[in-house]
Image 1: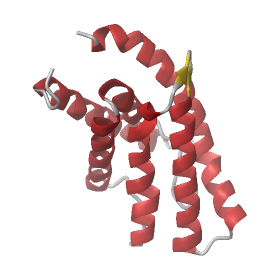
Image 2: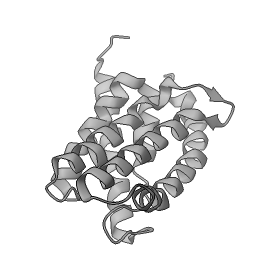
Image 3: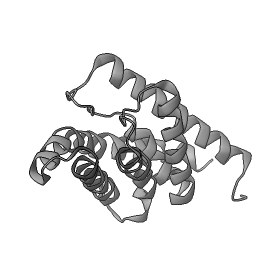
Length: 170
């Protein structure tokens, strides 16, 4: 199969659309909302699945495209700060595209944990640099919704991916 087959491009579009649908659901039902932005994110499930299914390169492209889609749909809150835009969104969400670079041990997908911690580090830095928050305040604020998102991802993604593996091979 070619590197950029039509099938892969369609899969990439489906993952981006699934991300937006899950992000819309999360925003509609306001799951674990934080006062200054951030919430439990179900959209990351689609981003991580795209990495495991299509590989890190195409997964990263899906993640970058999802940033653009978040901006268009209005679910991106970067308060006009370029630091916030890059660290809270572009770098943090694109990290999920690299999930497949880390080894899986049965149903423990280390890529989910590592990329979620990268997102946490990026958002913590953004809180410090863009908003002047103290380190522990920024870390605890961001951890309060990124860690629950990581837990949901660590439960849901392995279950979905294992069920979908036979479909992916066709």
